[in-house]
Length: 90
Image 1 (tube, helix red, strand yellow):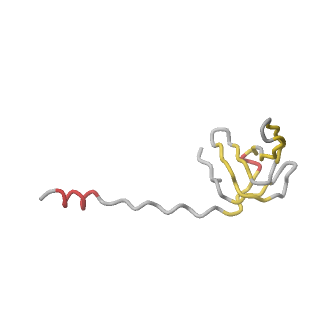
Image 2: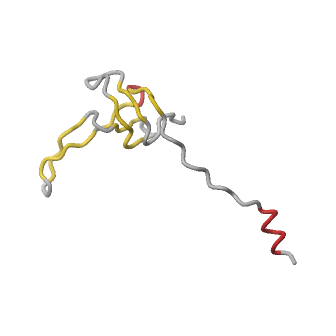
């Protein structure tokens, strides 16, 4: 199944402890239907080198709703094969 939410989109949490929070999508895991949202489900993580760090945890895809989609990347223009083949044959 193709997910409608992509990296960079703005979403709002609709259920759970962080209900009502808004943020942009940091990472998407389509295989497990999980996403990471900036500033939502912040967890502490201990690293020997850096000490305590705060990182976002995964949310289930069904617990968020899409508010605004990010702008799509510009499609690369494809050159036609006919134009390039005509110039080669002389």
